[in-house]
Amino acid sequence: MSAAPFDGELVIDVEGLTKSFGGRKVVDNVDMQVAKGEIYGFLGPNGSGKTTTIRMLCGLLTPDAGHGTCLVYDILTESPRIKLETGYMTQRFSLYEDLSIRENLDFVARIYELPSRREAVDATIEKLNLKGRADQLAGSLSGGWKQRLALASCIMHQPKLLLLDEPTAGVDPKARREFWDEIHELAAGGLTVLVSTHYMDEAERCHKICYLAYGRLLARGTAEEVIAQSGLATWTVSGPSQRRIGQLARELSGKQGVDMVAPFGATLHVSGLDPASLESAIAPWRGEAELSWRRDEPTLEDVFILMMKQAPDNFT
Image (cartoon, rainbow, N blue to C red; front, top):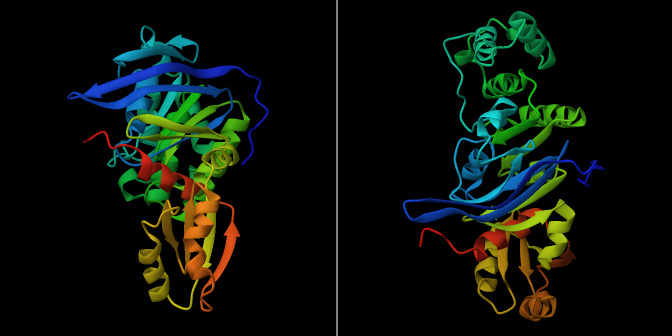
């Protein structure tokens, strides 16, 4: 998705964020700038430091080094003010399963000391289309409805920034689509969203993305910019059978000029950072009658798989 025309006001503006646990840097010198109304995708493998970075931004963790602002407040000295104007949806459902939707939202409204609690709860239930289930126990909800309730609890106090930590993990495609439609509607109203995800289709729905691997920021920009910056060349090859494609993957892996081989269903993506070397590497198989080759644009997933392979593991 292309970048949106934002007014330039930065909601997040941080430099050099660093955090270590047990002598290991889990976030290493990360810079980030996010504009008002922007949906900013935060991608990377498990253990890459995404959650730690999110917690530093909203004041739940203090960085060992680095500085900056979130919602114009200093992340080092004004974290209580950041928390009041931020909605944070964690990876796991964290509301009370033995309370109803309405009771959970009323509890959250009490925490934020919202005036006219009943009206705030009713308005949120209406906004997130929860009216027909308002009295249903949270523990009996499906994953998609729990997700919707969690989002409702995060936006009820009308935050200026929404932090979503892998919010759609474990929900079905329909629920994911509806969730993202809601996120875009919120962003159109001026809410800024920082979302971590493993799903490439979700990354492509963000205005901008960044990729974090083992604590280090490796790429950022629009999805199109990140793909272009990678310099990756890709060929797609299909064959007569899965067995032949699997065999071909083993034959090509490790060849000079081939930086990545990745199966995608009945096809294989063969990629390299030097287009000429890549073509030389695959030349012996191009004449094989049962294989069909075509030059393709690399996908975002191609780029991220390569980045993940190249990134040094901070556990070693």
